Each structure stands twice: as structure tokens, then as C-alpha cells.
Image (cartoon, rainbow, N blue to C red; front, top):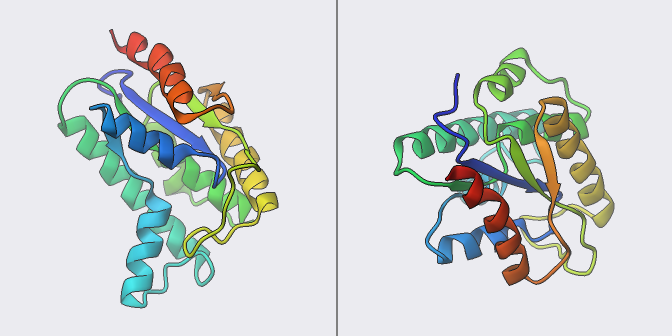
Length: 186
């Protein structure tokens, strides 16, 4: 499936590295955004007593992540023109499965190849100074580092250009992304 233009920008990396804060800053500055699947699924599944939680059924959690990311991709395609920033993307599902030592089903690999994003993917490196755990983020700093390596490896294998974000205040990260993303869409 052909992306309608290179306006779908992914922010990825390990948990607790500032991605969501940056997505919120982009939204506050008037840019279209797509929220992360993981936290939303955890919140919903916990609220209903569902089984699709990473500490209960990792394969089912991955399926819901894939579904969420595909829905976000389609919603962005149907939405207004201009750049949209995704807090993770379809390839993150593969990274998660690999991290968990689970097989990557053919349909998940196919989705990552068919539902593409802009060639430039912004990567938030591990940042121990801001990493915190909470009710939804139960990973350790070591797991965050391994997640970072897993998801960035998948994006690299799929031919995306990885652009590491600076470990800097959100305003500086915001300018960094806008200088490299919005110009690419014009």
C-alpha cells in the first residue's frame, strides 16, 4: 500500500524517553498527532478486566497494538493534509514481539511492509534521567533499553532513516523535529 505522501512521521524508542511528552507538544502547537497504542490498550483492558495486557497475554496485546496502529494510519490518511506525528507505528509491533521472544506472524510482517510512514523516523534514545515507572509503564530501565534496540532495529531493517533526537528540553526537541519533518513535507 502506497503512503499518500511522506507526511506520516513516527516517533519511536524505548519507554520513558520523552516520546509522549513530545507528541503532546506537537499537538499543542497545532500539529496532527496519533497517540501510542500501548498505553491506550493497557488503560482500556485494565478498565474492563480484559486479558490483552503485556503481563497477561503478550501475543493478544500485540494484536491489539497492530489493530490500533492500522486504525491510526487509516485515520491519518483520511484526515486533513499536512504532517502528522505518530507516537509509534506498525513496525513497533514487530519490535515488541521480538523483545518478548514471540514469533512475528506473517500478517504483522506484511502490515509493516504495506503501511508505510515517511522515510525519516525520529528515535528517542534511552534517557535514564527522565525515565519513570507508573501504573501503565512497568518496564525497568534495562527493558526500556532493550525495547529501544528492538524497535530501532526493525525500522532500520525496513529501510527507514533513523534520526536520533537530542537529549534536550522538549522545546529544543520540538524545533529539531520541525526543522527536519515539516520541511520534508513542503
